[in-house]
Image 1 (cartoon, rainbow, N blue to C red):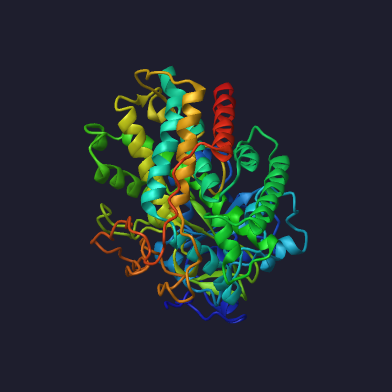
Image 2 (spheres, helix red, strand yellow; image 1 turned 90 degrees about the vertical axis):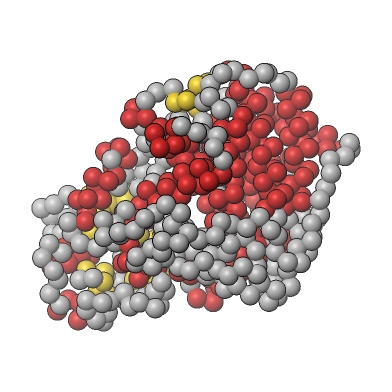
Length: 540
């Protein structure tokens, strides 16, 4: 493991006595923030922190990152008013921190400014940064226990069945807006498809599916009451967990419950929130940003329906240049430390800029086919769901271009607006136009979608995997099958050879429970729910 303290020792006192390089904010104040008066929540004196939450940053993040790089590999920035952080913009430094859990904790209970009230609980970034009992916010043995439950559950997904369900769900959505000849692909496609997929993967019955889809939609829609939506989401998930404890089925919720980690109800809800949250908002941004690249970049314009290699190249470029989570992977130093000449005090947030690190000007490598980007993070907290996410995104883009081959942007790409926010790289809308498609009735759509819902049961196995069946370490990226070698972590100079694409084969021993749609009460209930959903989204 590379030490994150190459320039000076990581002990209190040594960091303060060391001489930082010229221009480094460490020599002018507390927290490594230039001119900082010494208290973690105060505005720096004499210099304004670079804002990551303003419209100007959203419109041109590259300009902000360029200014931040003048401070060195780590720079002072502001996530939200009153929330200063140290932002890592160097690829190698990001790797050093991501791979050093002994120095940098993911547990936000170390965040001193939140603990002492300097940052109030009602600050808008707190929900994304606060401690929760899940794998994302834990370290050591607790992280391994919680992550094992998630990784083992994800490993059982049958990529073939998942692909079929994504295709049918995409058809359902395209049939809703297709007859109009125009659509906002963010609101009507990229945002809705992941919700439908995850809703089914977690085995929500119709009476809970409606609340889950609506609450998640509202949670990510700034025009809605997010606090009320969050309450509804929690209530719905607690109800789902209770239902699955009483009546387990072939779904991810039941698998998490049955895992040897023995998750409590609270832990169950927070693991599901992480999985659904990470698999909806970032995934919608990946789909949307990939479609924008394909529709606006002349390198791809000649053959939009040219095959999976074209789509794979486009999505890989998005993951390098415009990752859907631009700034995240929040860490808290366990003690005062110095990294690359920058003093990082104990308990003050260090945020990895995945976008800035991926576009580090010191990275000199051909990125075509190269998957050593940091969009999925690295180290112990590498995203365990990257393979299913890539399948969902690629199928979503492929299906839309197949169904609507003449789709084009309704406005010039440079006129599109990006949503402000420190964490994501997200369009505000993606308006397109295309030749109108034939209209289908709500009844026909509901019947097709109900059949698709039944087949999703084939995407998970029938019994929990035996302990030790998967020999791959939980902190390494999986490539879709338990017997495949994990991809190597990114290196300072990314390898030129492309990593293997996610395999569509199932993990050995994962038996399928393929369910064919049959007339009956359950199928009829799903048909009614899908019809209601179609009518609701048409009205929206």
